[in-house]
Image 1 (cartoon, rainbow, N blue to C red):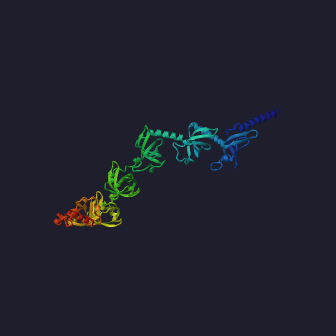
Image 2: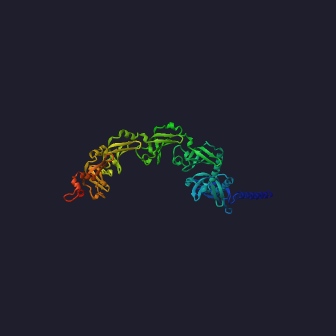
Image 3: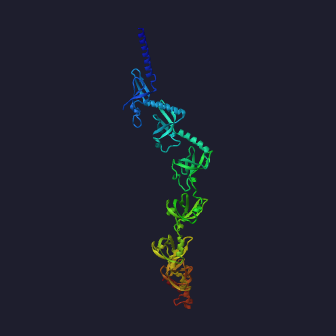
Length: 571
């Protein structure tokens, strides 16, 4: 009997101990707000059941286990960490969350990253006001725009979906806020590399860098913590207008250290110094008088630059472009990109200058013209242009001959050449001068015939009586045409013994008069006439009685002369 009682007592003790163990194992580590490990016991399209050693399994939405590719990430039997949202001891139910467990664990990791100043990898998801959102593997963090890079990013959208390492700046668990920075890591990397560069950098070294900024005067190159300047003049041996012709932003470059100011941390870089200077032994490569072809690279007011080989340019001065054309600008002859034939006129190796000529490729047409058309040659040509002072006749190779208005006729007074000629007319003329040095070629039409004035002294000697037509009346006298193109002048003082105020009171144009030749000069082209002297001669030839006594009419000689003069004038 005693034995049975003892057995019942032991059984009671065992039951109580077992109940305590059961309750302890179910509830001891399942505090609300804690993370516990569970086992997946069922997976459906709507939910996942997880056994956490509680009276009942916890039901979690299947959406918490769906991965980025849309597939379920767990299967029955998997061990997972879950967060105890709440539990009901009376009903034996429990609410769990897989995402919250992950989130809390990630926050723990972020706090550790922040405390140790280590880094965490994240993916930039999208742009927002002031910066970006970054996925740190389940937690969205904020990346301010100023913490993206060391300098402003030209295309902010280009960084979306890119992965980078970040430093955690600030965490707020209660608000689930995390702020990260990429710039801090880049600054640390830059400072580290700069310190290393300052120790090891020296002139003459070959270094590699990335183009970080391009300006009109050069390129700023990131050498890895230290920036250097590649000036435009050190980029190429040939002429370039802008550094963008050779370098693009972000391009990797191999360069030479030209100078290094350690104290001010200034580095001067060179690109062209990595290749041989094409100007070395330039006179041997391009001797004076050599003829070769090149490409027009630039036009300026005073000429055209022609590239003879990469890095070597010469200048064709505007005066060396054409033998005959008077150019206002080189664009009248060539354009950038044209292939042209040139002749080396001179080389200055010290100043790195080459003088080129284009017109020297062909013979000087002035030499040809001087040889082909010596002075006195009679030729024919077409009138290309007529001006007030003369006519331009096309000869050949762009050379025009000028017939001056004074060389059209020996005798005619021509106010404008278009009185006699039109553009396009063919004329015959004689070569008067060929001035190769001053590039003047003059012709004459009147020189094809003899100057009629050469015969005037013979035909009209002093003392001869002429008869001519009054062609023009001026205050100083009468112009009298004695033959076609030959005029003489009766000066106002040679009209009468009496003072004549104005010849047009006595004479009219178109009347014929007689006069005596009192002066003649073929060189001066002058023929002086006198009416007064002719009358005096006639008076001396009359009988004496008419000169000294009175006539039957009671008139004296003075009255007769006066009457005669008036009659002649009237006629």
